Image (cartoon, rainbow, N blue to C red; front, side):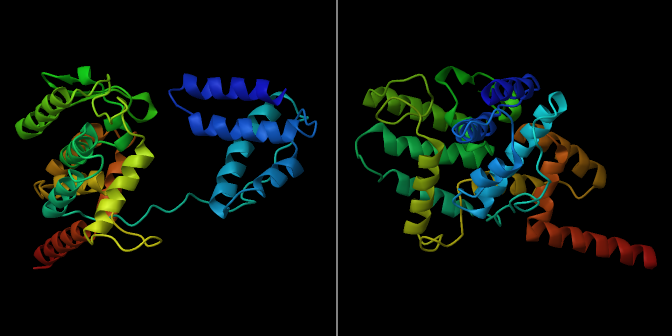
Length: 304
């Protein structure tokens, strides 16, 4: 019974363009837990019991919010479904990690270090070398880069077919970036690497994104760019953040130019809302200092 309602709930969200994979996974886990004790409808105490089995407060909050949203959907059709009060396991989203701006020489050092990854003499070290380079040069999400197929490299750039929220877009490439990708494809052919994915390991498939994150952090620690295990610091996603920040830094200080640039950058990065792009302003001290300095000059000019 619960799984039937979950199937309809998931289908509804996917019809709106959402992938909804993680939400479905959590709801199926909840259904197995609840139906294991004979529940046919959502029950507040059962939701609490399931959330209390979580490994952390954040996981419990995510579980609770996911199931509560589903229970609202189910309750609207059948009042026998119970809906727990909001905020029982905490409110608000998980705070974003503090971003790190990666210098060009640091990117180059990480790419160079990737060439020494095992197994030497195979495609894998080259894959991470060129993958990290592409992320730095284009600001792609790691999931978008790993979903690329060889046929997605076209004359006009890179076709992103599996963007967030199911969006598809075309990414223009600088000549140097295209040359690098063509060099990687030549290396693939020379080493006999097969597979339809653009970036492949010795298994002929793209590496999992978690593996890419792990490799990047390991290299960053090896080079002294990040502290020991358990400490925060440079992350793979910071390549995307750095790309956005450098793009904003290069923009003309003219207000209208900034607005046009921000709108274009939002589309380029595949953001659902331009508000997500403006976050890079508030998250980056150097940009905030520039904004404050410009505002002060404007104020002094008007006061004179």
